[in-house]
Image (cartoon, rainbow, N blue to C red; front, side, top):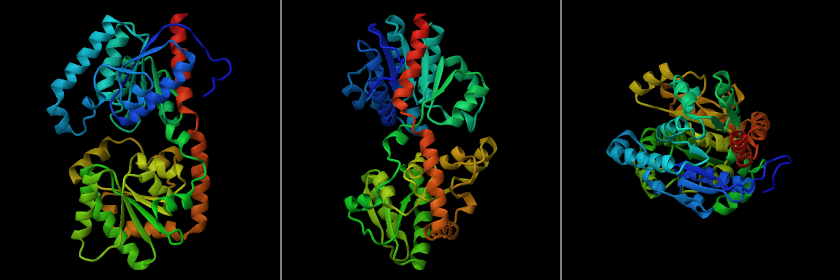
Length: 393
């Protein structure tokens, strides 16, 4: 990786603290470390990180998996340990102050540390914006007190921070850097052992047990509706682990008619790359499908109480990232009562059979891909370096 013309290269022995709480943050942290080390060859990196960051020479004070907690009940069960970890980090940072503290995602844990460090005179950065632009927008005031710089992956996030006078840099999305502009559908099918000559529907009901429970049967019933009208279609479901695979198999067995489905453990991106259409839950997977230039149908259901509450809290017109990025409904979003086997199946078939629409989407998705393809590691390092050099001056 080269260094842009005019960038600072410093021999200073600086300490950069990074806190990553999960696998995606570990990957971002490792990329950021590589780009920063080019600018600061004598830099020392310390905090909390995973295997990717440790491979780059990171010193993790606590195993990252101790922060990787999902779900309210699980968090409550570990709350004392999380407080102890936070206290230990702050004591370390106050005793041996780093030149900058960078929290990667995990805002409920990292923002408090960033605020306390900033109050102590240590510059703080947050990498990956919380969804403050979508709901609980008053969190912006806490963020403004916590960070000297926000690094966002998406351009509309940066616009939100600019409106609220919070220093921000849009760095692009790492997935846009890693996924090629032209997907290789044939190669993906070959590697997965799938028929190259028949249409393929990828089905992604989510990676968590609760999502699969809510959406799995709905998506399978939609697939059955499609298969009765297009018997030639291949159905493929990637499952994140053995537990989700067994959960999906149980849902398939519970259907009252036989449904031909290929289940793949992991490899969700390859399955999407191999597909003609994707039926999926909202989330990061919609961004991956967009970068892979795949027509998609987004479906989601919550409990009626949760949906009623979120409908009042959410301040954006769309739930899927392609629509949010484009500021228009490029992909159908069928939510709650609108998400039925028939509506989902009909939307999938329309996108499978309408070549003109497929071409239009490919063009729109490619344009969005270019927008996000910014060399995120490099842009993030450039912004952090500018902050560090400003403090030296």
